Image (cartoon, rainbow, N blue to C red; front, top):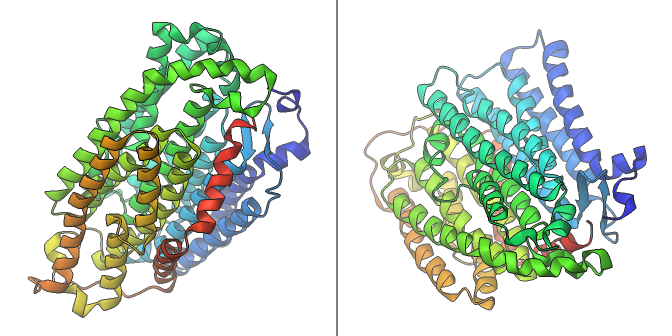
Length: 515
């Protein structure tokens, strides 16, 4: 690593970690406004004020992140955090997910009479902060700390409906299983430190390239780190928490959890394994990193594991989703399957594969948050209308909600002209180009299975008569705007994907230079 990686100045602190500083300040501002400014304000007004304040603060931070000089590669702060185009791409997507979640949360909290809102919106921002710090980390210990900040915030948000047994059960399962995942990661990190004497990704790669990567203890360390991150990515068999947590959590938090948490986990996995356990750094042109080319031998050990994980995740996620009658559980298993598709891009280990994963994360954020936004409006109060039978006949009684739900489901199925189709095309094409023809074929086959249960919901809405009266909530302006924004976005990147593909390609190229 260059000396600049250890130089410290306030200017560099702001340049690299300014987004994190702003997110912490935003969370504290929301708490202060709730406790000091709005203490005598009625509950519904407080929800609106805090929701809009959260959205505007996140929007301002989103502007701060995206308005950067993309001509420069990036920088590293004290060997702990990096800011490069790859990281900026992920940060912007995470903050955008937080913005949509904050808009939807206002209506959700009024519908469910959750009037103590200050801590909710503050925790939402802290969860965004943890996810952002996670993708910026180039240090295994800091990555663990960021992971825990994000996880603890999401654990509490998952159980925010304190009097709901499903919410409490989901939060407890998430906490217990999440603790196991964190423990695996922590043991893997400790073993890596013991073997290499470092927790910095570049230093780990340099030490491993000297020949110790063939030691069995290295494989154990890699397996533990993989297991910890696989939990957050919801890969089979580390997916056990997903259906119960998705079903029990507040629906807006389910949408946030399905997107922002997944973005952070995939970003961290790509960063850790592309930098520390693969020969990518040898392409940077730095003489000191030329020896990392030998790590191509190490890739041959962890890639087969990911191959089987990807196959099982695609198969299991889609096959179990077919039998679900609760729509939130169905989308939970669907999210598992989508994680399997994105794993193909990581397996490809090419520029096209990594760019495909970045594109897929944006498309998945739009279609998943949009779908959960429609679900909580149809639901009205939590668990008011979540079975497939509840969706019978909604296409004619509530055409806007049915149309938007159909749009998001069509995108999840991977049908044109939506962003979901383009996302699957890129990751499958990257996998085929690298020789993973069987996996790509299985991805296409399981996508056909997925189309069945997605289109089944549309069949219920448009081709079946209702069996009971379902009364969705009144359309709230912020939530409706968020759903329309997600819908327009998923169509736009489906019709004109080239600009986002270009950004993703440019972003992933900085992985081997900033360190």
